[in-house]
Image 1 (cartoon, rainbow, N blue to C red):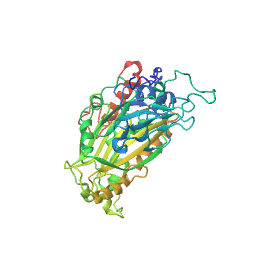
Image 2: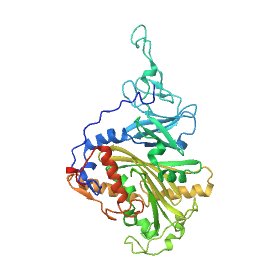
Image 3: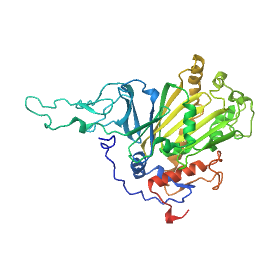
Length: 428
């Protein structure tokens, strides 16, 4: 039996009736952020469609029988390393009555046992034990031809690149490296060029639509405007050098800011950013110390992989951000912080201190979730209205425009294609 034979492939519902305003992605109806039927179709067309979804890092499950619970869209999954070291991802839903099987977030277990009726599954998701299989005192039990092999947990295809684990429901999804392409592979290779060590996790619940966060991570335009810490201490400035790129399908995006030593940023002065606050200083200036991990001058690197992964380097803090949709107006953001296995004690301390820059209460990133919730609250009754995405011009070169909204427009074009949404009247 193939990995996917046990996965029920859903019949796609019809595309939601949404008057998609334009083919160029410059107008996005607010109702794609609010409608439950849109969210439901996303689970079919995207998360159970021909995409690879990030689920975990191999460093989180280094030993045989290690596991981590995760999500593909709103579907709970278990990411597991079997006794032979192979990686497996299977739906965290008992084949008996549909109960959640593994309720711990991570651990080491030879068997995953459903608490309801004690059906037990091994690290490959195979059913290995059923209580009272032959009945008790001649009563109960299963038929003589009951086959354990026919009742395992639904398995997904699994692939890993540089220790970053992805899974897909679809047998038609292209190989992972073909799905990512350059320069996304190069961005992953750079940050995972050495063995890593997981330092910890944070998670937060955001009362907004998951796609608003996907937009946010493809938007360098807001960084020096929304984030007062960036502007006040000069970490991200509008006059810095930027470069990046996308895959050929324009689903993913990667971008870096480079050229300056961030340790000198606080001396750069006000460059007409209205968030610059001259009388602010750091009680602990060592927050902005540390030493570069690479010799390429990059101070900030943000890589956004469709649908729900962000990989970051902000100075010395390294992390993955997993966007986990819960409802049309609700998602969880799950941060996994890491360093390198050969870090010395001082560097580990720096990474942990700089982790305060990001996360739910991060000195930089706390405004992102607030901005998303401000949008969600304001658009709830005006779904027919549209967002306006023309900064940088509609003819901007996507591979060169690292300040405007070209990557966001490309994201929406890819999304609309997967969802089967077409411009009203076929216009552009």
